[in-house]
Image (tube, rainbow, N blue to C red; front, side):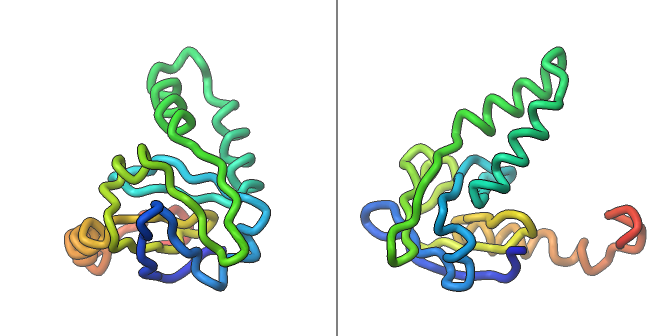
Length: 143
């Protein structure tokens, strides 16, 4: 499970260091792809296979499902971290997420998310109050 907030820097070659506590989990390979709110989703390879398999269950007659899968899968890039735990974020994905130097990596359960730090801070500022003010169930059976 991925938790927490980390702030690595993007280097001149478009690489970031994975947080040390996640390197073993990602050592065998990972997939980076477009996420919502213009962040990137980062999955261990085995978790991405599960997500892709769930997508295969969607009806191909649904335009919304086709559109989502096209955008999600066409941006996906499989990467293998080097011995220091660095991996390259392809240029098209850096552009999509507006990544420059300062990035924020957050744990999101089964995946990590990579955000431009300014965009993450703005998102968090805009949504923290509604999170604190939530009075009805958002996630069934949990909150």
